[in-house]
Length: 288
Image 1 (cartoon, rainbow, N blue to C red):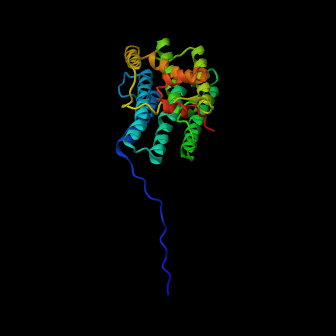
Image 2: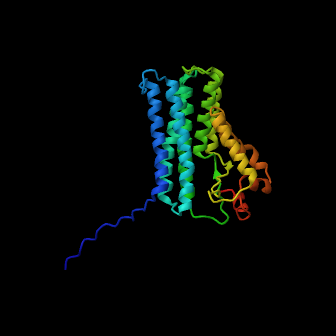
Image 3: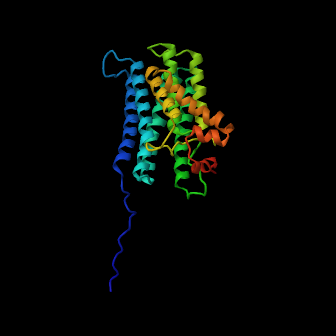
């Protein structure tokens, strides 16, 4: 009797939630358009004959900021819909690789780093940032896929890649505003400062500094009048001072985890991070 050939088995295809992954796709598209716009500035192929490299790099900065907004929303929407899972995590990391690793490295390289007295130093800084951002995303996925431990914290180990990208891009945005040079002839002290800042951010991404994730804050979360007032003031300041406030907000988050949070007691940490009573214990846990 002939033995039937057994057909190969394949893993089940994952179900793809529509809304969260559309937001992640928005993140990816913003990163793609940022890279295209940076290349327009590099090779002088802007959409209009009068468009300068300054205009292209400024527009690329807006695309990266927009990608930060999409990245902020996709995970929250997925959790609200109860549809967060491995597919969304992997797709989000691929989008982050484009929007927050490759695009900022290209933007800072052409606008600032390659103008250093030794261009090889600019290459090195950009490559270190790109490598650390990629390793940070891979490490996050491995930690997220590992079996969950008792009292495991939802906070981030190391500076999140979107916040790292926002910090360096918004700082460059501020430096351009201070120099007021449409030809992007940034002075040497600012070039060195940006190279040092980008290197420091790269180190923070791979560090074990704990940063709050604010994942427990949702659109249905109750808050205080003070938080509403502070949030409203921050949004108004962002609209009124678009050149300055992005750098202030991103750098405040960076410095909070690095310098302020380790010295806060539980009560103040709970207030600043809007934690509930039951969330206090889990957010004190440092992941291995």
